[in-house]
Image 1 (cartoon, helix red, strand yellow):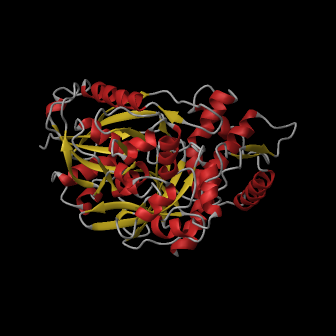
Image 2 (cartoon, one colour; image 1 turned 180 degrees about the vertical axis):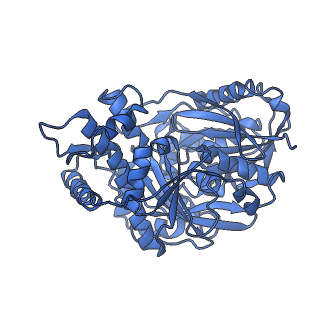
Image 3 (tube, one colour; image 1 turned 60 degrees about the horizontal axis):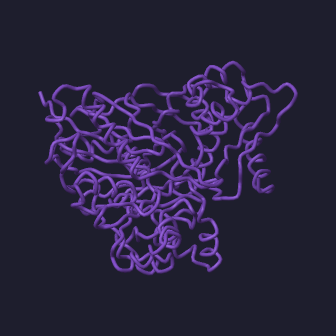
Length: 498
């Protein structure tokens, strides 16, 4: 029996999770540690990089105590991470110059608007597959260099480095031995030419980002370095698998064939479809992104992002206090047969794909005297599912492939009502795996490939297991009226600039 373990580190938006994964892709133990969210101004979101690192170390310590002798059985470490979140730090001391600017942060909206006004949108889209939006890392780097005293001069002298969270964690795990990012994370920066597989100096100049701060780009499954000087882990464990969270989930869902698709329901919702070795250009507001790079082969994906998904349920809990815990929403929403005309557009930080409207804000529409908290709860789940359905429609138009099925993961995928609604809206199967931690599983699989635990993609696929499949209901007459109300509600929110 192979008793080796893979340590998967899933560094997310609200917390860090460490998982011990067996060679059969079973999660043996899991530990999560949350860290504070920082909101300096409306629309601004930051994290303390030191708090992130502390949460990672604590999650590792917490998971190791659950499995005797685990630290000596770890054969590899895989990393997956919140993607566009941006850290700039001193190359020598490792000290960050500013809080990390989180992917949700909209502070660079004026900067991206100015770049679009110069007519640069098509250039960035052609080379990076992305739209000019504050979501991505490039303008976040420039903001730090322009707003921290002396930072730009230090960067020009080669004293500062940039990384998304994957880069930051490898740097920390290896005691500063490697400054690397993988191709999937690089493709989320507005600085990486996804066709040529390298940093683009012209785009960097447009963004005012010196290329000297950029890390080396590597594949998603190779040796990056090994642990060194960590209190919670022995020296010498190879760090050898890495992908951005959504690409890692696509890999962890075994979506290895062109056309395969998954949706992760976390803080936001992210629908990705494998397009193989073809980087499909989107004409309907989606992103073209690197799914993963194995050896010299790059696999691409189409991606649609909904900025607010599970966070809308948190809003019901913390903001409106309609529920006391997130799991309560399913029973509450199921207590009514429909939202009774109420529509929730969860555009709390703007609308992502296919709209890309950073000025839009959330709204609750169609409220009557008879509206109850159950109707609002149901409308919130509908809003999440409808947002994802918009992505699926755009994806089919771009790729020429309707979704044969949708694999789902993330915390909100445990909500049966949400998953059934999603299946009804899409008119296709929604498949929930036995292991919902597919983001971490993807990182584990990538690391396992590197050290020979898995022989290849088919070996990984053979270990993947379904927990439940949701079929479209026989009577879906409610779907078209719901879609029509949603379309009109989104148009109203955008026209009002809410």
